[in-house]
Length: 186
Image (cartoon, rainbow, N blue to C red):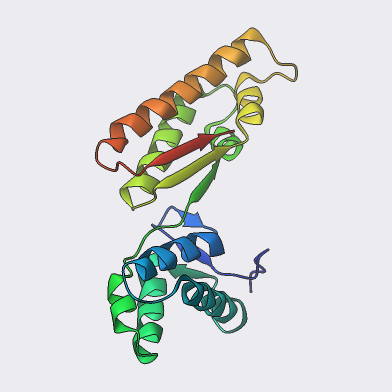
């Protein structure tokens, strides 16, 4: 058995992408659905607490798909007599965190072209599977890995700007199809 740090299963977005189960993400979506019905916001918070408790204490798998999670929530809401809330609840992928250093390691030292290809693949895989919030982190370590230096140089600065510019360009390009897409790079 795999021990997950949060003791919650990971959300399987696609065969390549897993995301942490985030109570805030679930709460936001349930509150949005509740706002379109007569269900009070506090009830949505109680539902989220119940979902988190179920996933932590009773769910036996280490991953769950977005659709399966939402199907279970809808079924529970319907059993509680809240069919209107269940109907308003539409599946949405959780925010996704992508470690840039991990991608750089996969690409290999000094293989910037391979890194950019991996970066594009991960970004497209995430966004084409409904992820609206993508967080890229560990940029500085990634750049130092790709440039094979310990001390920050002008070359590092240039590569950092290239990576940031590339991701912003991809976000703008994909953002035309998904206007709610948000991107964070740190």
